[in-house]
Image (cartoon, rainbow, N blue to C red):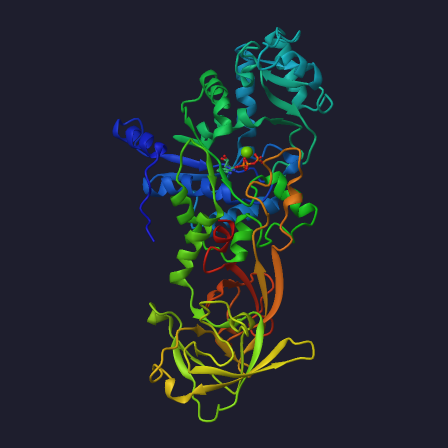
Length: 553
Ligand code: ATP
Ligand code: MG
């Protein structure tokens, strides 16, 4: 797999900044809010920010934007750190927190007040909305806009001291109520909120707003390129206004790229939380979730996800990506990494009537990786084959087993089906077959056998729970229509749990071990529920081929 970075407009900007001497080193950051688990869109942003730092030998900070105490938790903060590390990245120095800067942020707010550039607002939230105007109508000035500096300083100090009720007052930047950019119509920069904060506890009852906090945090950390998604483009003038009006040496530049939208799933923390809360999935790490935890548990690899991020690139145009691109990258990574073994998901019993004298063969775990080792693939008088591999009335072109026909058992003999046994309702319950003893590792004499099927020896196979995952939604853009609840499009077939059989060579596999089950797909032992030997549990990561595109076209 290629690891060459693909050029993009941000790299072009960085190249120019380094060439002109504007920067000698680049510093980026990944700034999640610890209010949920990270999803595939965040993975893109992580690969971009940390990837740039790696490629240019710069630095990338991990900074929590922890300014909304009600929604934030240590559980989320911890999982985010785990996810970044699992993806293969390491932040520069310690984890950083916007809350580490609360005192400085407060000081800069005082500076703005002193310069006549911020004021304490007494209007209610609703009144403020009325005064704000609309896209087509300018706003109008609040009656409190021209308070004296002294009065503003006094009121702001008393806001901090807890003299006023939650929501009673806010601190606003004094910019321009007639600006065509609504973000510049005197945005609130501090609000009163008595909420316990995960790091500062009850030390503060006022919290800075995101836009105000973000640019100052970037500047305090010496970020050179502050990269965010396009919805912040209209916030950039505010980002610049704040930094232009306070005494701070550094002025990072903000660049926006388009957010990743992945078909057949959703990338909104709020909606993912809804799926968890309404128990549509088993949790944030349900293997159907597009969260990093979910994808990991399903068996997606970090290298596969990084490759996916590389392939989709970074631009300012719409980034709506088909799941097939993601699955393709994962498959390619697993293709080279996963040992190949046999498993039977939907067993049909086969009895070999001439088993006497047959021998078991040794086989490689991977055709191109002899270093993965070998194991014995046992054969015995009773076998399981995949029920789908037998057809009494085969369609044209059938290469698998049929009555009177022959197939090669993978790594073993050529086998012929001599008789079909059915139950009283006519279902096939067993096949009586015979092997050609002269075909172990050799082609049969005088005839060609085209089909190869996988099998297991009943007495050697071990039972396993196999979880067959499919897409979580039945339509490409489940949340495209605001009027329709995206939950209506949940795929009822997104999880099927079956009891199947796997070859004994996998019995000691640790959790999170990847395999290819030959002809069935890539599977991974479940991180939570799998126990070596006593309780094997396998998750289907992805099928071997993209069955969706085929079905759809
Ligand atoms: P919220 O709605 O809670 O703000 P968010 O997805 O923006 O959700 P953040 O924690 O603020 O969550 O995101 C951290 C970083 O990840 C931001 O820089 C954001 O731009 C980026 N990011 C979030 N979603 C995507 C996405 N779908 N594609 C690319 N980057 C994303
Ligand atoms: Mg955000």
